[in-house]
Image (cartoon, rainbow, N blue to C red; front, top):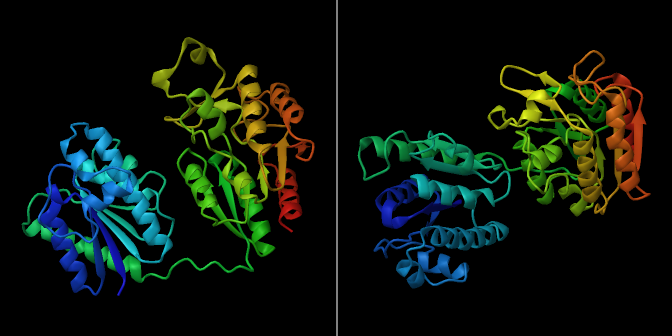
Length: 402
């Protein structure tokens, strides 16, 4: 029988979680019910009671019940549940996870699921999934299926039963799907891309697929590329072609593509080969509501009515190069940097208001100055989207991968 972990606060969602557990039994699964209660003890018997979750976090459930520090208690229960859940996954004891809750319960279950590996079926039943900003917090960078219940999950009625029934069938179907089976003779390479380097990414993908590699793409908009870092650490890839690491400069200067402080570090930590380029790195993308007077005076390129790229200043390019060098110098595996000299994207071309290859050299020269001698920087007299640039990326990748 497949084992399904159910995550719920039984002091508020006990009846509903119990109904879900019974439904999964009916469908031929062996559910494990984990209790994240923080308000009171419950009579419902959980397979993993709240006392055990609190203990895993280094706390006692009695202390949590007495405490009025809701934020601290919530984090403790999340930490304990993550430790238990990860151990269950590592030991092969669960085949899927279902969370059920309102705002707090969904946030807790979402954080726990986000810590679990890609490919493990994850389903979150939430009555607050449609609230602005919450859905992205619930799923983060994980492959969680978010099931908006619409109706409040409060007691059992025909509508709530229908929601839970459908969710139970959904996770059951997900578990029956074949798991990821990586063929070790086929190397898998992650590649980042944006619409502004799509031609380059497509050429690189097709050429490498012809050589027998599998290529997995990630949109470098701040979420998917952050997810890529997590998946690299899970050991899912044999190499990385990072065409669009613009999330690094946007993290430094508050841009919308920001991918966090750890971007462009996982491949180096894991010791796998990486090819680095610069699509979008000479622009920043602060939200318009945060524009300073300086931002308003900048040269800009409007991608569409919602997205505007502002030309990075020489000082910002220097700081970006320093961040790149600090990250790449830590790499345990081979690194190649490939940079076009005639524009770093399709938005960066002769005639574009933000086109300035002379200023781009500020980044290039600072990066060369700071990188370790064994990290080669290749410059190509072409635009990022030109065929000749893609050829150099392909050559560099084949060198480090073979």
